[in-house]
Image (cartoon, rainbow, N blue to C red; front, side, top):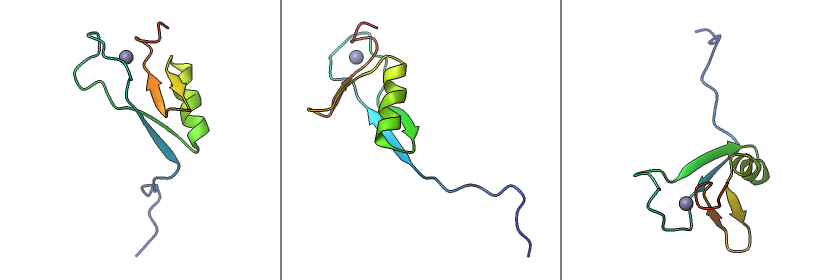
Length: 70
Ligand SMILES: [Zn+2]
């Protein structure tokens, strides 16, 4: 028995699944959920916002880049 040199790493951190809160014909089939990963919720939302998502913390909903006009 020996230790693997490149073992599979365990998953950690946080995954955020975003669904757009708008009905928009330009949404692609199976476009959602859009997944963002990070160590924390804040890191995930930061990544989502950096590609144009609007996060609505109060209602825990989100608007995709297409619908938020970015
Ligand atoms: Zn949308």
